[in-house]
Length: 251
Image 1 (tube, rainbow, N blue to C red):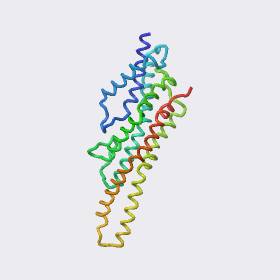
Image 2 (image 1 turned 180 degrees about the horizontal axis):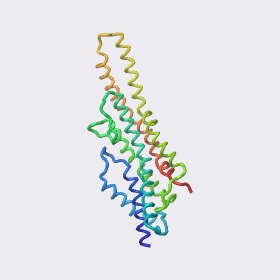
Image 3 (image 1 turned 180 degrees about the vertical axis):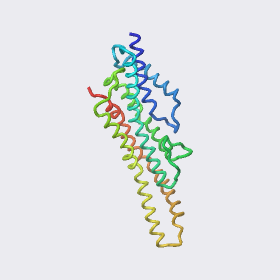
Image 4 (image 1 turned 135 degrees about the vertical axis):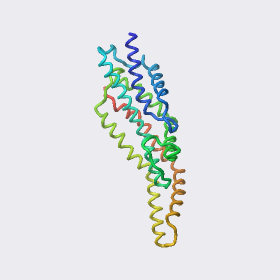
């Protein structure tokens, strides 16, 4: 019995590790790996005795390693669905950064304040809203509920899990453009206005003037777009637990 509980603790810890590895923090830096492993162990210590688990130990080492790899993969997939919401905000922040003329070279990792201040600011705003909206509690509830569909030690993916991952990935582009749409329209209107003005006043330095106006108008628009961003993210955070459970087989 003790060995079964130890095995259950290990399986819960591995599934929790996958989620903790991919979920965001309030800052632009990821938590150290030691802390993330410790968090997954805390989750396992709290839940291993109360969640459904396999009644017997695997018959051989290969089956145990397969179950462990499956639990980690399932946890990573569940965390990936949640991480895509924040990747959407990062993509939108980089688009906004280009549209209002702040420039910079976008990276492929989590935006850093020193290199991409606007994208990093929006990413931290999304992380703050994640906790203020209680989405972290919903994700923990979805994590606990996942063992009702796939007991600890018997990881399994549902029939629509591939579709769920594809939709979550495609949502980055769609929602990112929806968030950045006002800034794209603002940049188009300013460029159109100054192109006409450049024809009317040939001696006017249109490029320098439009650059300054674009930054001022863009920052003013950004100051009033917090509710727009919060509206989109609130819906995404509400739907996040359901999307995580969509990866699992239905009973």
